[in-house]
Length: 464
Image (tube, rainbow, N blue to C red; front, side, top):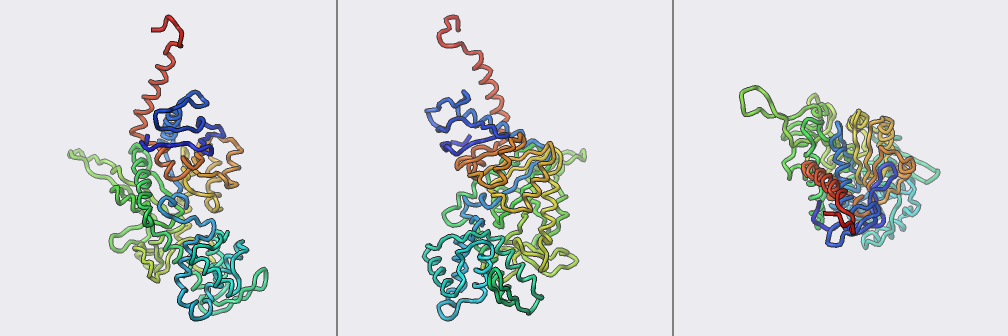
């Protein structure tokens, strides 16, 4: 267990099928270790939870799903609303223009898309936009409650109504829109790059957050080698998993091949790494430091290019350049205007669905708010498989999806909730086991409990 103190909050709980396993909140580390409601010391309960989770990690197929909440410890932005950091970037991109002339048309289109996605406080007139940008520059702007990915989707939907070049789009109801293909292209380019710039993580002062990713990967690698490689599915655009893997000397099979010129070839997921034995018997050993990475919504390192015979999907992986003008592939960028979920996203989602519906499959969800229907539909499909186990780590469990799951009291649904154990950092540090340690810990727990049952009661004169 971590040497850092863990003080359970009253909102912290760990449930299996709606049954709570945690005792009354109290300090888990320190001299004062009170007995919990179930007659077990809190540190013993956490040990028991880790032992239970260790059984999940030994399942035939183990997958992780990381959402935006998993990057908060490194300074990542939640995109359930328009991130203030994105608006700040947009302000910086047009600050010089606004001071000299009218507000750029692309910025007006962007705020109209935000309003169309439900944020009624999004500015409409040029004067309102100027006032808001001034508040943004002073960090005083109120939140725009519109899912940022839905805003991008709305912009692409408008753009798909026009030809590849030229054309004008006019809408009268429910909001007034009069724009051109060029304005929409500029709005998409600026919004996409502003979002990508906020995904350059960890930010200054949050570098320690990368350590939790390193711990996560190290613990996942303690699975027995005879089992399938762990699949890490992430909805995030950042490169935190890749950075942690490099720091730990871990090979990521991420769907790209090549050294200097890395291109997307999903068949590479079927490959594996082995090395020869020291004898001449011809046997080989499986390389142990390998994980599979699937970026369901793309990455700041993905760039669209012209498809060729050597790069049939037209996707390259290159270092992100904040000042560049490359066409970034981050969801919901379609391969062509009008496609809802084009390549390479469809390939990634296909593999996600195939992974979680396998027999004896476990999905560990961390930092995801269940706001993406594409993802939710696949999880619902997996829950139709009797052997499937779903473990959710969430600070609040406030989404309708999770509330409904808790009401069902399904023993296949495990939930770690609260500010101490439901966050990415808390779950990785305190609940996710290191299987090498847990085997020893399990034996210690069993021995301790067996001996406790043989202890004489106080006042028993025959006790020895």
